[in-house]
Image (cartoon, chains in turn yellow, red, cyan):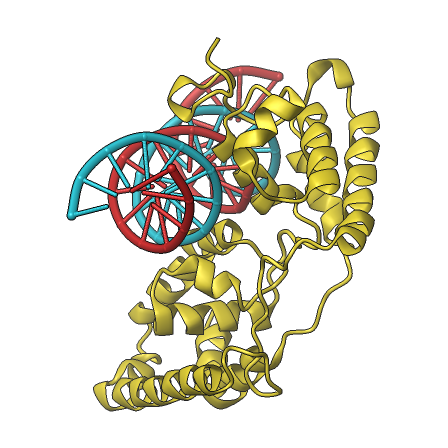
Length: 241
DNA sequence: AACTCTTGCAACCGCCCGCGG
DNA sequence: CCCGCGGGCGGTTGCAAGAGT
């Protein structure tokens, strides 16, 4: 028998069921998010390792906030996208509660539209005007350089002004346990609400409850980016929509 | 009420990179 | 140096739900 399932010989595809989520979350809670190849054989999940990893990082991972992007988050995403391009994982590292997938989706469905509408606005000509963009660009480059050199000079150690808010903190049993327990109880609650015989994907109900998760404040880089760059330009952009 | 169109997002796919043998 | 594997990333797709007619 070909086990564990390879991604090219997938046994099961499509939306995850609450049952699968619980199995995966329990396993990760116990063993930590590593060696994904071992997950399917050890849990009995008929999913490939990649699918398990994706499900965990994009959905089950503790501390994930879903939906309802704040103005501040949107500004930050817009700015970082302008600065870094479509490097969603890097952008996500500045928004600890958001996944790269979530940010990418939000960009593709909301922000891209917002910005393209904006480019049709006559008012926006002032911002789009060459001089302004050059100015902004120069500022961007300067600040990016500053951030990188600070990071390098500190040996990537988080500092008061440039702090690395990693989306993938090293697995800490106590931290993860509490949060995973919270997640699992949410899963179970949602599961009970639904007709379990239908194996309804968990997405809908979790979306609602996730909004009630405590909101972490943005950390330093976000703050100075917003203060120094995004500030006026981004406020203009968003005000026009 | 019924149908069509649009939107939002979870999940998949394919490529790339780093590491170990 | 080469190869295979695991993991990460970005782009794309498919489908469910909501909006519009």
